[in-house]
Image 1 (tube, rainbow, N blue to C red):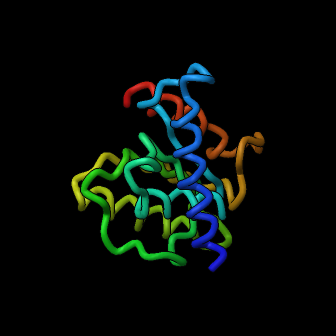
Image 2: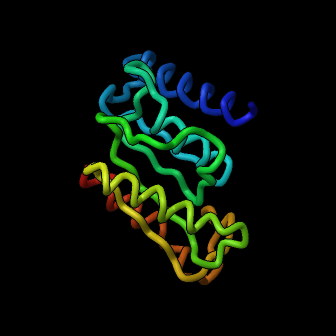
Image 3: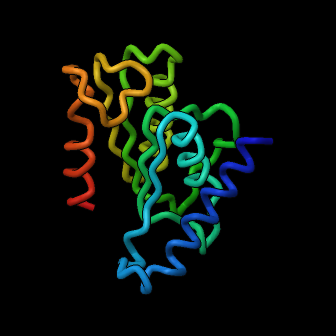
Length: 146
């Protein structure tokens, strides 16, 4: 039940930001969602369960867990998705990253996957001298080509 509440909050956040985009000088067609670990679960859940008001224009679940909500069918209007993780994720979430990517690709949707050999779980923005340090640059490059 907590995951469902998180996904509902994620959907509400996307809708709220879009609703107030003019006030904040944001482009209403460039509203996305990003989350790490549990936040990646929320982000990927929103990608499966959005409604017209809460559909993100892009999404970036970073080392998400995707086994705690219904994710059997990729929506016809699924947003482009950028997924990142590390092969040495101690929770095994790199397998969730590859499964999510495969679902998007099989559905004919835009997807990018960056899976680093090392970086562990929770690499975030901190520099560790590991391959995963470059994920934010890959994400930026992806965003500039949407």
